[in-house]
Amino acid sequence: MADEAKKKEILEKLKNAVIQYDEDACKEGAQEALDAGLDANEAIFDGLVAGMEEVGRLFEAQEYFVPEILMCADALYAGLDILKPHCQQMDLGVKGSVVIGTVEGDVHDIGKNLVKMMFDVAGFTVYDLGRDVPLDQFVEEQLRRDSELVCLSAMMTTSMVGMPKVIEKIKAKNPDCMIMIGGAPTSKELADKWGADGYAEDASNALKEAIKMVSFLKKLRDEKAGKK
Amino acid sequence: MNSRERVLRLFKGEEVDRVPCFSGMGNVTESGINKLGYKFAGIHLDAKQMADTAASTYKMFGFECGVVPVDLCVEAEALGCVINVYPHAEGILYPTIKEKLIHNEDEMEVKIPADLATRGRVPLLREAIKLLKADIGNEVAIGSYVLGPFTLAGQIMELNDLLKLSFKKADKVAKLLDVMADAIIVVAKEFEKAGTDYITVREMGATTDVLSPRVFKSLILPPLKKVISEIKIHSVLHICGKTNDIVTSMVEAGPTAISVEQKNDVAETRKKLGKDALIFGNYDPYNVLVSGDENLVRSTMRKCIDDGVSAVWPGCDIWPTVPPQNMMAMIDEIKKHGGKK
Image 1: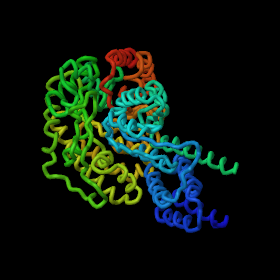
Image 2: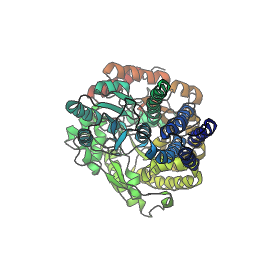
Image 3: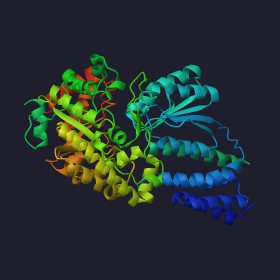
Image 4: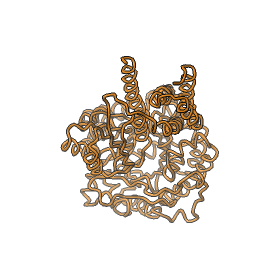
């Protein structure tokens, strides 16, 4: 086991590498974490995710904008790719798989990718259908994968209107499946009207929502660790 | 004063009897398309169908303009991107770019084809403008739109890469945006020659929700200025999102008018820019006009006018499934309320 000072230093390095969108430092930090015998999940949550939480704060404070967030996400993935193979399956009572994609008629996928990143971090199995995805493909993929969650994204009003059809079809076949919708034109009212279980209105909100979700997982994890 | 006079006088800074109700962005309706017996996917590819559909929003509802194109892919297609019009879609899907022109950073040094003015659907658009003008050009002003340089760049390459490079390699992006500006100018000139009365430059991708005001000034503004300075007829600059922090930069870009959407606090913008600035906006074309009821439509129109817009104008394209009674209510309310100052 790594000693506490060393551990703290590595976690800090991972966190700062994400905030400063430094991919190389993030890779280094991830490798150091493994070499020092740190738990990979801990490195992800207390290093990478802690960094992304700070990025979310910087975004809200309008110090960071979307380009910075995208670079931070690249840095996070650089670390995650190294750490992930060493993760123990987390037993948090929250397991899951998600089908995610941008609906047909929309080729914008930045918001979708940020949400996907947080699912990746949280250890979900992610079935990413990409963008401009025909509506029926969401329904088929959900049935085939039996995923707990489906995320539909659209940045343009012009493509959002396909969402209720997908929601209706999935809920008809599988009422327990949770559906999140996201994208600039979506709203809580639309989510309610269409029978979706959650929404995020844009990439930044998607990021916030996803961070919230992962922070919640992190909290569960901490609580669990505390109980041990 | 007919609609055409009202809009053109407004652009010239002259007195008008009330605020006009028009747009510089897409405003075709399903009601119009159905009445004409057309299919949405077909109107992008046929000049007559495009012009007929564009004219129908005026003819059926009294919306005070005629605008073509209907989609956002004209420039990118002329530059060599492949588009998808979703010919088999049941509902309404707007064309998107299927195949990008730039696939990685090394391909960013693009050249504009010498025959850009005759490529893709540029000639079709010229024809559509002429037909639209012949049809309703005596009654309403005819508008067209082009994309802004950054938004166009986001179509011909991955937006994800473009955004990151705007930060990492601003020089390279600035160079690309300058080329985009030149391409947009070629297309805008063709629209001008065909007889359009005003051109809206839609720099939708460069909103402050995405880029910092600092990057907007250093990277987005110079090529925008270039495009707008080359448009010799009336021009409108539209940017989406929370634009309050950049409205002075938008004016600095030199358009005849600026267009803002529902996230802009127009009362604030009016205070900032003074009484003579032409500010067009700013109702939500989906959540108000399509999914709202008549009361919401009417109260929103009154709010736009009371906040001080120079013309009541949507925050984006009007979504085609707009209920006819909401279109009627919108125009009726503006006629009733739009003269009071």
